[in-house]
Length: 99
Image (cartoon, rainbow, N blue to C red; front, side, top):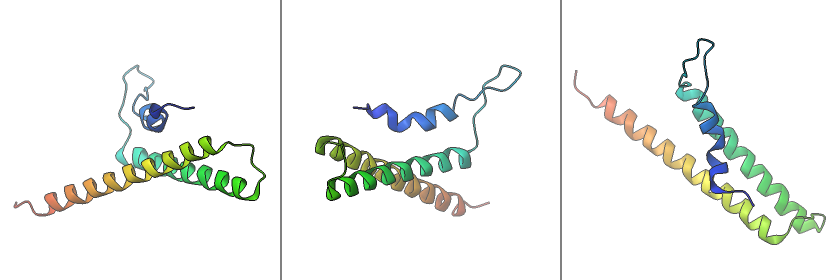
């Protein structure tokens, strides 16, 4: 069983990128966000494939592993929605600032 830290592995790998001169750099927001979206998609696809395999009786995956995969997909989607909501709120705050 994978730990919960596996959900954040793609993001943490991106934040420790190193330049040739030895300094660590932060990737752009779009890079981190697209990586997060790809991760969400992978969790959703994996859960859907396991559900289909269980329904057809062709899967060697246990029901407990299936439930874990479905929960990972659900939690990652909820995280993505919350990040989107925070982005929209930040955008609205910036747009409402007076110059």
